Amino acid sequence: MSFDVLLALFQQRIPAHPWAQIASYLLVLVLIAVVAQWLFGHVMSRIAHRLLTVWGKAPWSKALTRYRAYRRFGYAVGFAVITVGIGEVPHMGRYALAIERLAHAGLWICFFLMLGGVLSAWQDVYASSREAQTRSIKGYIQVGRLGLGLVCSVLVLSILINRSPLWMLSGLGALSAVLLLVFKDTLLSLVASTQLTSNDMLRIGDWIEMPQCNADGYVKDIALHTVKVQNWDNTVTTVPTYKLFSESYRNYRQMFESGARRIKRTLRLDAGSVRFLEDREVQALMRFRLLHDYLEEKQAEVDEANRLLIAAGNDPVNRRRLTNVGTFRAYGIAYLKAHPEIHHDLLLNVRMMEPDSQGIPVEIYCFTALTAWMDYERIQGDVFDHLLAILPELGLRLYQAPSGADLTGVRISPVLAAAQVAAAQATVHHAPAHGAAAGSHPI
Image 1 (spheres, rainbow, N blue to C red):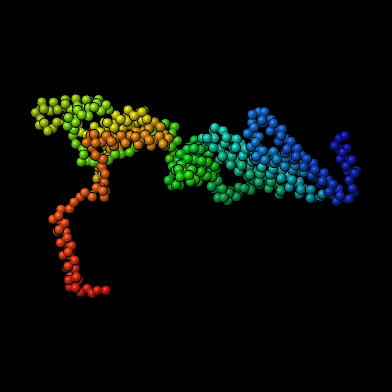
Image 2 (cartoon, rainbow, N blue to C red):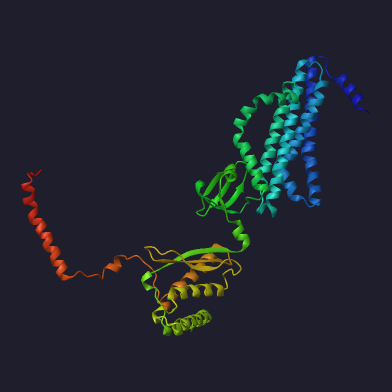
């Protein structure tokens, strides 16, 4: 039995009254739409779930169910049934066209909502992958959803007013200035998000420092409009995406990838402790393994230079001698080169900087072989603990501004103290007479 025969049989059975015919046809049409929606929304979802599970795509099935992609597809099928069948309802007149347009618009809305759910499911599946630890596609997903929303709006509006979508798009040209003003931040963020991701300028998990935005921590999320940075105090700073493209910031990713972290710190030596080393002190310092080769080489060089000076008849006062601060710098370099947790393939130096009123700065410049913060601070502390402890062995002192404890041992001469007391008493006795002579009056 064909569908035409069933339709003819149904037309014979329905009442002859127009409103009864309309109600009967609409009831049947709605029932068909509901059945079609149930078949495609529930039955097809189970079939798709089994197929995706067999293909090893179970996360996709869960994500599509979570974002109701199957259900929205079923709604779209139901609206499609109404769109096609509303014209068969008799006595509808102009109402049939209005219902058809509304159903057609609902069809496209449900279809684009389903596509948006597919994009959201893709984002969830990607977020659980290993690539998501370094690259985020959230910005692209948001751009795709925004594009779907714009296309859906144009199609739905063109259907409702019975105009071509091309006519609608041609009218948008006159509104371009308004659109640019309204979507200014979105367009800037779109360009910035695309450039940041495609050029690998920023990844999730990068440690960035952006003082102008009070951001100093790890990148937690990269979206179309904002980037979330979790600071070291567990607060979260939200930075506009376009700022990370138009303004400068510091990214420490290369430091972690290189496997080396820089130490750059100075020790300030007391200038009064810098002096020449005596021969016996040089011999005593020979017991340090890190200084033995250096002192032997430098002592031989100094002895040869002094021999030539004396042979030329120069005064012995002009002879060359080793200094304790130069020996300290040599010891620091040797110590860093022998340290197992210092990166020996990168720049390493101990240099003396320009002296000032706070002593003589000696800068320690090297790179640790471990980049984790705890390891870095431990290595840096060990290096400076050792260098500070070795200073007295070389006759050097660390510069330190005098504090109250340093001044407690300072005594004033008794004669000077008596003179100060007498001067204070004389000032007290002469103050009233001076005030009366000046014509002052008590208040």
